[in-house]
Length: 398
Ligand SMILES: Cc1ncc(COP(=O)(O)O)c(C=O)c1O
Image (cartoon, rainbow, N blue to C red; front, side, top):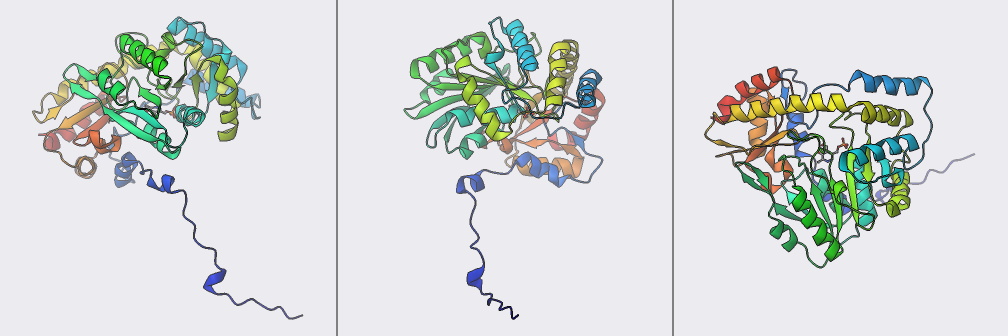
């Protein structure tokens, strides 16, 4: 039998189709760009990523291992396993004095997943989302992916700390504003809303019919009280609010990918639907470890926060040696966002810090144009490493 091969011409090849333009416009992480410049070098002191230096503590790892030994390897309910939702509801009730139950809690596969799910439930293309800047880049990126316009209000650096002018925040809200996206305690600045400010914001959002997404993943990393002021203390069942939380930072569980959303009960059905279409469910054994972390982790949280505080104070004091350097005091999260006079190109500065001094820092521009001239440093590191890092950085800071 003769097989007739069709003549292959250009016309038979598929047209190379572009991916969604909106996706191609979302920038790559500029922190990664600096980190890539240091890849393969073992001598780098890594202060660039927002991650505790210690692995997850043993008591949490053991709980995850026990669940795996018990063959906890199956699909789970979309909203998460009930015992974890109940444990978190009790934790939130204890911490914030409101009466939460399991129906206020949806478990997510990380804070990042929770942020995406929350926005998917709220944002229509063309909506405006008002947020603060500088900002962790993933927060505006999620909104851009969903087709929203992001409007930023700059935080202001003062000696005592970063602050937000609420008048400017409210003035930035127009007719198409769908949502206020607020990350407090804040990455990269450590800025923290007061309870009074949160009340004013909630009153404004109620009056204007605007959503609030509150990213509170650093809620427990605060240096003068057990937890940062939270919208969870103020919200009620009629509010349009989604609060995002995570086990990554306070329980040293970045690699496990576990978080949660606290919401009025009426949103449970939609939220669980969107968990289904993103990840179906977080892994069962990870959720089992999460129960142990939340239930038995208070001593661990207190110890690590004390250590971060000491690291933050140490770096703050050391950086005062350099007249070109300005940084506000921080009282929460584990970052300093540092301005260096004379630095016009923070990407170039961060790359030089890697190449010439062997210290990994995040360039301020990674957090938006408002961050130019700055760098971010994560101080959730041992004292020895921080000492060495500042010693090495000194020549470029003078
Ligand atoms: C402000 C903020 N929100 C959310 C997250 C997400 O954390 P994860 O996805 O590890 O829970 C991070 C992580 O760096 C963050 O800095």
